[in-house]
Image (tube, rainbow, N blue to C red):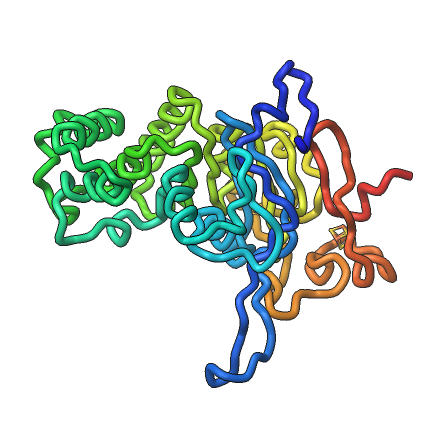
Length: 339
Ligand code: SF4
């Protein structure tokens, strides 16, 4: 069932590509590799949907679980509990063969393009690999698809790049090859995990522009994982803010950036650099304290040890549910409880 009713005439039930229910990805923590001493609750009870053709940003500090979520969606981590429905099938119960077919539906753009590309392979071979792994043995068709993928990421003319090794390319060109590899099987969903954080500032906008253009032209569904709220207005349709393995606020991008209702989202926005030169000296930082341990997260609201608005006797005891605020806008904070 769809999560939201939209006012734009979109039938979200039919438009839903991905539906995640009560998803948990926990990792056992063992002492000396033997005795289990706890679980790292990297992803802890997520519910969300993604519609076809939309870009959703998952935002939060390091260690909030967003990269574990990405790897779980990719099928690299097995969920501990919950379900991931994609195009009507529950991925959590897939066997190895089904998982192999499922991975074809998802393209992955990693954070570090140099580490993501095999250093001993030329670009042609790098782009050919996924085609071979998924059963394409037609050399001519492979070559056609490889050249088309290079053109799509603006590495033109393709013959200039086909025989290059990754170390012969700039960081921006490497990331374009990573994007071409993610696109070559025509996936339904792209997961971009901090796709520009390792690149020079001058190249970041180009790569974000490229991803946005491809997403819009192909009507791709895109999960954009980032710690940087400043890039998402320009890029995403909706934002989900994550803290300690959970979603604490979700909303359409303009709503969330202009009217944040969770103190953690407000703190993330407060910490953004102010473009106004008069405020250049203003110190901007996140609330005191560190993100909590995912082995023993705080009781009640997980943000309560850092929250300037914590309500004594409530927030440290009772976890807040997600309260609806407006269509598609919800925040897991007692301050949003209807009176
Ligand atoms: Fe702060 Fe309480 Fe809201 Fe948590 S529930 S964010 S501690 S006010």
